[in-house]
Image 1: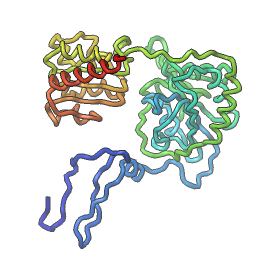
Image 2: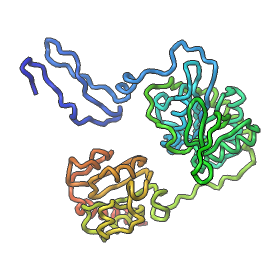
Image 3: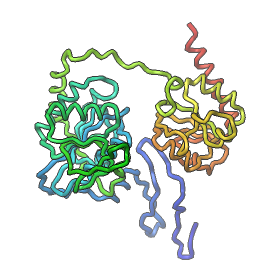
Image 4: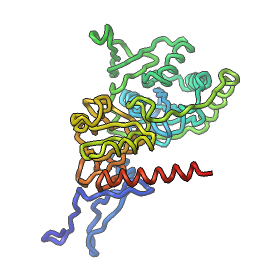
Length: 384
């Protein structure tokens, strides 16, 4: 498009492209004698150029806040990100935010709000080593002497480690199930949620989900502390010798676990007319079955299979949606899913825009083709 002045305009809604370097956006460059110049910038660079760094380059650090979390397949979940954000929002210009991660970490530590990041990839959800993790954490506390330790109170590894830590170091104070936090103190619910109790910030703080908005207006320094990680790894190995025998992880099929705990979900919407074909595909893929509210209201699926704000919130690694337009309530229910694949005839459907991979086509045709491909692949695997 060209204006009367001869300067081209770019549609701001022009689709971006996704490649190995990340998200690419087209931004307006400088217009010269040769006309308009377009610069393609990686999404990460655009993001970093907009947000300022919380700490000044020459900041004199006098205090430390420590955040501890377990990663899942190289990434922190939303609850853990909120714990990091809580520390970053409470920190002032002389306070460093240090993040200790048990497990691999591929996330941008600076975007999370961390100034220094210590990663122990040899531990995490794939290995049960509570004594080793506790030894590494106590060794880090002895070195950094943090004013406060933040952890997500998620009912699993982080919650257990936080309570173990409080007992091991005889912590001066610990607060669990924290639902509100600010520099003046924190708050938790008491008496079945009928009373909110407030107190000063404690030495160890275990945060409930959604107590803090993880979207930060600034960046941390994001430095990796490799040498400290080596030291903590050695301390952990010494403590773990002979303490437990890890028998490994037994993977369960997605169809055998609750929908909100499933790692692979195949979901149907109003665009799925052949329910029998859909169920056959889900059975062959060994995936959990979900559905939109419209499909449930039509009687095609059970109410406990409904996904969305009025149903279940899921956090699957892979979410395959057939014929789901993507109402805002449904999108809210899949906000924590890692990879979303959508099949729909409407290229402008909200689900298509949310998906990481979109297929514009008829759901029945694609389900039939996919079912045939999976059966052929399984037959080849079963052949001697």
